[in-house]
Image 1 (spheres, rainbow, N blue to C red):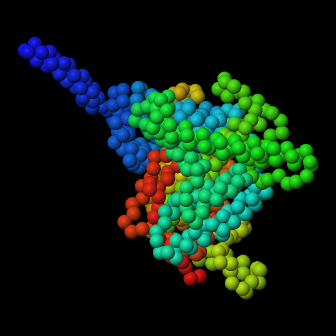
Image 2 (image 1 turned 180 degrees about the vertical axis):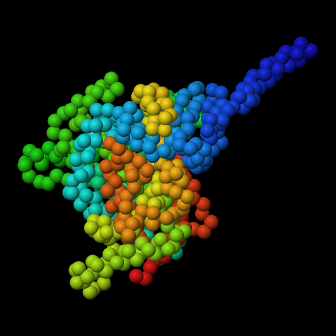
Image 3 (image 1 turned 45 degrees about the vertical axis):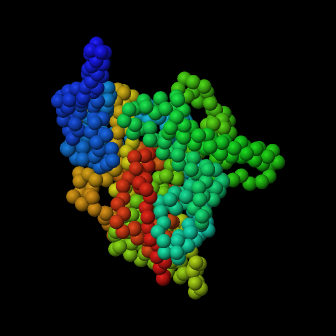
Length: 532
């Protein structure tokens, strides 16, 4: 009996020692921690403990860090000694995105993380593969016919769905999640522009749609891999096909089935038109890409199989990438816009005054004495004349960029304009969110919502793209920038003209940790019809 008791105690001592090892490691790590700029770095773990502590306020934590550096640039260490650099200095950003563009590629880690969803599409590609896609897409995005198609699509979505749904909500006197409505609007819009297909996601019932839900899940779960505290944990879950990775696989399967089905159907449609030499080709991006790629251009992808630009999978990747950019960025930007506008009534009134001036000119030019249509939409020329609204949109984007941070990797050793060394293979991240909050860039009033900073004598004056990087900059500047402004200004002008939008009392806005800085839980608002 005594021996048995002693035997048990020895096991207990063993497990106690094992349990104490992590505590001992944490104590030693804490003992040898050190400060590097605004970061606290720990042996082996790097900034991981501090990251976990500040995960709920990640982008504001980045701002705090960068404000400690005179050049708004700091070095960091990730777990296991991986070195990187974080900056919000416009000169450094220009160096990375333009001057030494070829030396800074997409982060291999990030490309690997999102490859299951984005494949080899333009936002997940570098080198010749990226150049080929960029060239083809740039040509299409610069055509007047595509711009007109975008304007018509946005206008019909506003008059046929968005405004009637908001009117119905207003009549009931209930709150609505405006972020959800705007995401549905943007989803329908980008599906029509990218695929030439109308999923009718913005339906009065606001019910779920399998493809839309799958796209949401694929986006959220793919980029959620970035924020795993244990970086390889998602790979284990993927291998075992469990939890979030099982959901991701199922979501991507739905997206693939939808996209590939449309691509194959469209290929047959184009072949019939070309063989009969009659009929009109569609205006959507998919049809344009499929007809633009007249000959096969082989592209080697990471020493694996060779795909051609007429491959169904390749087209799938291109369109899914454009859908991601066109849906999430605009709806996210609009959500933060209305949140800010709700607390700035003078700005809202100034937008309304500009809209009424535009409508007065329309009435004068067309000699219209009758009542306006029930729902007002605006032409491309009218949207272009809304200088103040353009300034307000840009000011909102300055403070709440839809893509708050971007990651690159140095191909070779380099030196930034501020004299800081960058080693080969180092991660180089620039925070667009932090750039909007730097006094060195925007002045002492950088945290104020002040649209007037974009105006000179009543006219909009743009800023250097390396200072205002909401649309990226350099060779990879967003091709859909004009399309985004058309969509955002159209939605804002129509809603502000017809409704007063107030955020529910007591609501506190928080952002998600995602590819896009969406509002956590959505934006609950109360809509009241105006008497114009």
